[in-house]
Length: 164
Image (cartoon, one colour):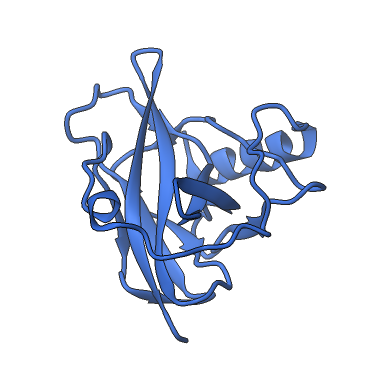
């Protein structure tokens, strides 16, 4: 499927999506430094953010590798930006992948905005531009899902945000 067609499908999906499959976390979450074991935990997906560390509002590339997954595995157009709330990773933003020159969007999760597009079939092993949210410097993670053999596989990449 061509990238322009995928982008068009993503726009149509955003326009038609409601609050189904949403996160309950709001941007009022107090973010802190995650414990070492959380930062070094093993992800079920091989994900990278490049460059990393990155500054606030910087456009970076988010990539999910096909390594260890079936050939027809795919990801959706969005992922979850998370911070450590003192006891667990909490979603504070939805990160939408961009296509070509479009860097995508990063939108805070709040009581009015709760749209997610879990899977529309974007190719793995291709990096997509994303925008780092306007957040305090610190350690965050991006959680994503790949659809493989009819099951969702969740993984994450740890991101260090530095002062811009």
